Length: 172
Ligand SMILES: [Zn+2]
Image 1 (cartoon, rainbow, N blue to C red):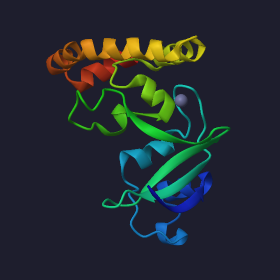
Image 2 (spheres, rainbow, N blue to C red; image 1 turned 180 degrees about the horizontal axis):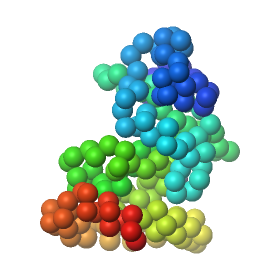
Image 3 (spheres, helix red, strand yellow; image 1 turned 90 degrees about the horizontal axis):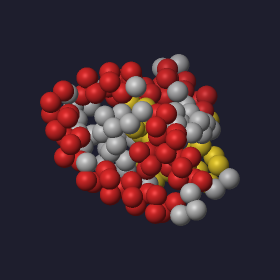
């Protein structure tokens, strides 16, 4: 991914709030209305492990509008904070905007995959993986379980829909 510009946390948030214009930072086409960008007004920290975003980068993957991506500086380098779809995209073709969005760091998002789970479940699972003697084994077992239960999740989604699943997860 080509890096166009580094922005501080405050500069990026000023853009999303509309207090500053992309041109103020020498950027021209920037997707600020996207759910990803709007999510930064709700939070700038991973909702599972609490990792805090420290800076933004304006980036392009070549064919779309430039995007504002949030990163956290860690001891092991930068970690991207990503938008997680609470009800996974593989189940819900409708995007559902902010109602279906959570900010997760790449690591927590990778732990979640396409599970239908609450944040507290994800936190516990993350702890289990991090404390495991053989973390790869725990992850392999989990991935197998996700694979085996994919049909059930799809059937459940087809029966009740995204909105009901979001409500159900919020009540657990
Ligand atoms: Zn995290």
